[in-house]
Length: 278
Image 1 (cartoon, rainbow, N blue to C red):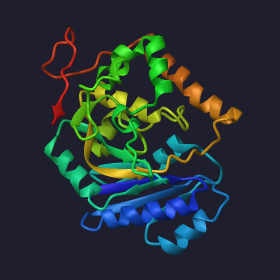
Image 2 (cartoon, rainbow, N blue to C red):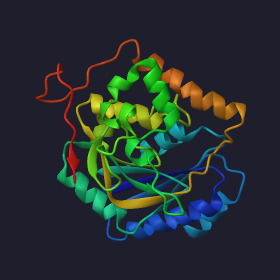
Image 3 (tube, one colour):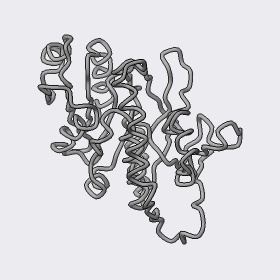
Image 4 (cartoon, one colour):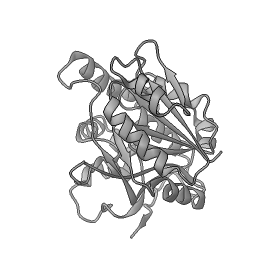
């Protein structure tokens, strides 16, 4: 099997239906499986999936487990050569999966890949190529962890000479809204760290992929539309606890015993070069 597509949903019934329709269309010429995990939704999501997408695997959590743990549940049964982790609030272009799989096939050093992300109004989302937002950038800068993410250009995001919206490039972090992974690499580095229940698990996984000697890529020759619907309100204690708590977990995991990144043939004394295809 070529591809396992994993979608985690929580109370996004209407958006989920759009997302699944776009994914099944994009998979028309691909040998794939679709695994949907419902994280104890209270809307009509489960009933909709039973009715509209009955031929696909559905895991229904009895209680809310969070995105990382829900994705891991699906990963444990994923059979594809590649695994796509994609949010329920995204619409995938019809050529996205064929073109990204082709790129991964041609780049055996690639562990993960992300694509150009647009808002419903067509505005480019910069988190597609950086992998994380300005709050995480500030965290990396303050803690000194920024030096471990040179390809994000944390200190240089306003410069015009870095990765353009339409440039294929090696990056540090692939955003979890659309994360295409090589399954063999996942087996090597392990699944998502479930301590990052909602935020930061994509950053952590991307970093572990680089530690294992593989590359993460930003591939802009196709796109997804991301509605960026929050599972939790930014003004709730739960959101604050999970969002900022993820930063403390990341710092505790890496800050005091930072491992060296394995880059075959490149001495650790020198910073890695940046691949950019213009």
